[in-house]
Length: 90
Image 1 (cartoon, one colour):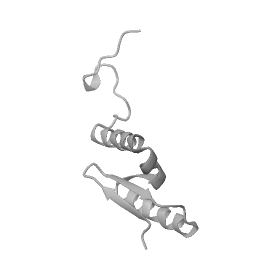
Image 2 (cartoon, helix red, strand yellow):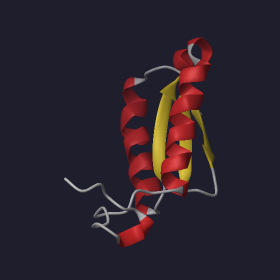
Image 3 (cartoon, helix red, strand yellow):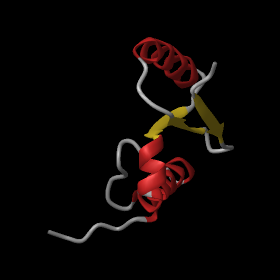
């Protein structure tokens, strides 16, 4: 029986809500997370009580993760004049 429900999005994000900690479930969750990450997905997990008691915080974490995947930070950060960003003179 699956004790969590995962949802994926076009931006490569998978969110999982875990019902309650189960000793035998931890290894299964780790394997599933590793498999998803190997496929290029980013996995974020929430406990059911987080969703029930702090839905605004959960939405904020998801929104930030989506924004990061849609507008990723360049790596490395651009030098002065690159990427349309001008840095102030020091």
